[in-house]
Image (tube, rainbow, N blue to C red; front, side, top):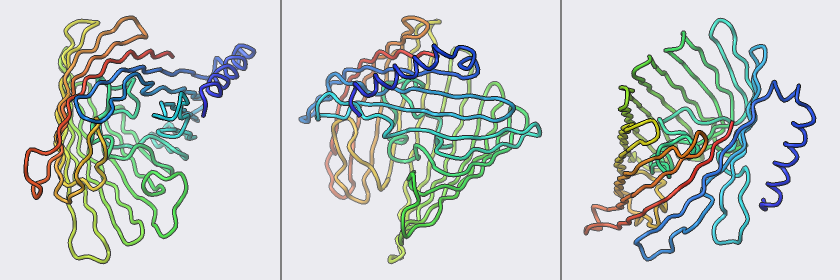
Length: 335
């Protein structure tokens, strides 16, 4: 969608809400814009200046019922100044919560797995991890049923289209999954599982997360196991990914962070920070990110990251393919 069309949508929403103040009081409107500059040391062209992400959020809750719409936007790339609108990470779902703790939602909603949010405004670094990009799903289109035992325990079971598809593809079964989460005030733990079959291939994901908030220090970790079996072969490919992240709040406005991840035999690894894996089945990847985040105002945050990425194959030998990237971002979030 062209930028002029995005502006038209924003203007239409503004006119509608300004003319119906009483109605708008029941709705929540928000969003963010994440402008960035990225430089790379590789032979490939760096992104340079880019609208990395943005989004408009609309939601409403009343009498236990709720609805949410998330419309993301991002630069399309080297095809002019157009922005892709609502083409990735979009959400649109309805749901209901009951007084006894049961709840459900139907539509397209954010995936249950991992500790990272889909949107860059909600993470401390400028970019998500390779694990978030290539291992855990972004959204699911289906039905999620859950139960909350107080504020500490949450149980979810869902059925959806496979591979994050908005419609059900031919020659495939539904994706089934679930998650058990335990989140007292100081720490959180979760375990999740998902399984799907598309054609002759069966794939599964086991996801574990843990974290703790110790005042000025916040720690998060994630471990994923993937399995992919081709119906015509005997062998099963098993991959893994591990992520660890630590944040230290030096003050109310300055936070320092570091993040490391290691991936092994992940089948859908693609281009990341200007480099791409060789395509070998034993491909490994390692990433490290470090940088500060500075709260410039209540709604504006600045970020500065350095990220090292390495793809390596045991059979190919050598040191693998490496990249060094630095990214500067200014993120304005409004509610």
